[in-house]
Image 1: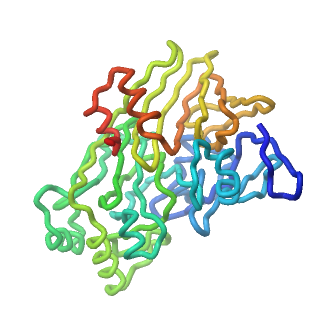
Image 2: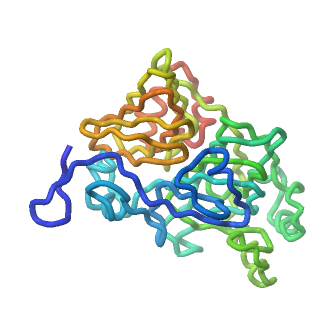
Length: 366
């Protein structure tokens, strides 16, 4: 599949699976699990809290790192070639999905992300951030905090945050590998320690923390900044959200290929696909797909292109490719911007899943 490039008159390139630059964050909660437990190579040095696998966040936008499009910004490709990259009539001012590997060797700060309206009104940002966590690894007894307990009002929440008595007001949930939590914007949350997560979310870095320290370097905030953050967190809080972890819903493919829908909502969907040795995942691409490998090295192929994808690495698959093939044994995550009826509700209903089970995946109701 070819598309006109903006590199000059008559220039054309073949679309192919895109490897992108990936910012690495060394926040204080990180460790070395992404390298030591997942085998990511090449291995960044020092503490690794997050690797931003596909990012179009302002100031942290990815560029293509290999092939004929090397050096091209993701945003320019998304806005310049929306039909070829995104597919299905999408139009927007940036690539809409952000994905990360997160190593919570230590607990993340208790924090919250504004929704779209609140982000524009209070933060001066173009969008807020709903997110979801797919748990890749966690020790026995691991927990997360997500959402405020029933009956807690703003004054009670503020008092508990100032005392760092988070269990007095926040729901503590058991964490198990393979499960997923859809976290609507406006929900206070944290996870860790000892937890390795794949996160998918809106393209935004807006957040407010309840902690006395900065997550970037652990330095202490003065009282004025700390109290301001908590006041903003309370202004952006949505009291009604109390999400729960879900195991996902299976859709039959073949005997040796498994497809599980992990979460879904208007901003993103995430699926986990597995294939036995010798089997092939045939992944349709009606829209761009973010393909992240959470198993051993696999081979990804499209017509005219075939390369390995190593553990804890990611490809962006343009819609123009039509289909990608992943050779088993394989264990991969697939993130995308869904058409909720076509991609989620209809196939899950056909697979025998009822409306309540589908709704529990996130925000899927019409």
